Length: 326
Image (cartoon, rainbow, N blue to C red; front, side, top):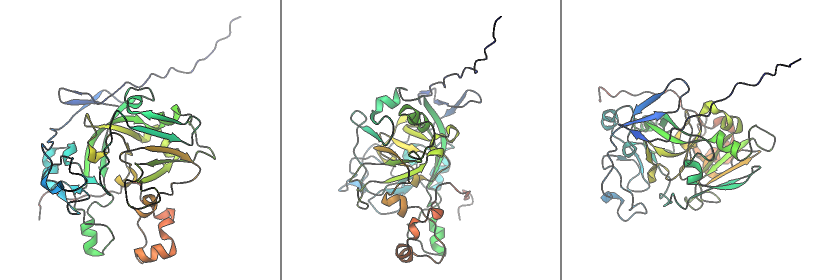
C-alpha cells in the first residue's frame, strides 16, 4: 500500500526589484500586486556651493535652495516647504533632509567593505555581494523618512532644548533599494533570537566624529525587530533608482521604515551581534526625550541618558500645513 506524504507549499523566490528606472518608474517590492512608482526629476546640483568652499565637504554638490540650519558646516539642512511640496510625493535626493554630525566620509563602492562580527559566520561583504543578490533578494521599498527634530523650532519657542531649530521640512519620501537585514542575518547564520544574539549593532566609519571612544556614529536594534521580514529593515545602496549620494550615506546605509532618522546609520561600515544594546556615544546621547524637569546637566549627573524608557525609536504622528503659509 502507498503512503501519502504531504509536502509544505513551495515558497516562491521574491522577485528582484533592483531600482532600475523604466520609463520614469521603479518596480516596487510588494506581495499584493505588481506596482511601479514614478520617480521625480533629480534636480541635482551642477557645482559645489560657495558655502562649502574651505570646508571638509568642498567636494560635494548640493542643491542651492536647501536651508542650512547649522551654518556652513556640518551640513544640516531641509528644503523650503514650497520646494518639498512642488517636488511631489517622492522627494528627489537633492531635496531630501540631511542630518550630518560632521564631515562626510569619502567612501568608494569598489573598495568599501561591510565588516560583520559576533555571528556564526563572520565575514566582510563587498558592495557587489549585496547588489548582486548573493546575500539575499534585492528589493525596492518606498519609505517616509523623518528627523526626530522635525518642527523643533516651534518646540524651542515653547521651551529651549539642546537641539537646533528644524522647521517642518525635515521629512521626505523616497524609494530605497537594498537587501533586507533579515536576509543578511540568515546568510551569516542567524535566523532566531538567542541568549547570545539579542541585538544588532550598526556603526559608521571610525574617526568620523569628535565624540565617543571610536569617533563613530552607532546604534542598535533588538534582534526580533531585525529578523521581522514585515519590518523591511534594509541595507540600502540606492535612492530613487540612483546610487546613494554622499550626504545620504554612499555607498551603504541602514533604512528602518517607521523609525526616526537618528537610528539609521549612513556610511555603514560595521554590523555586529551582541547580547546587549549598543554602548555607542550617539546611541545614548542623541534622540532621547526626558521628563520636563530634567535638563542636560541633571541628565548627565543622574544618568538619565542611559534609561532605556526615554529612547526615541519610532515616528510619532506629526503634521504641518503647506497652505496657508503664514
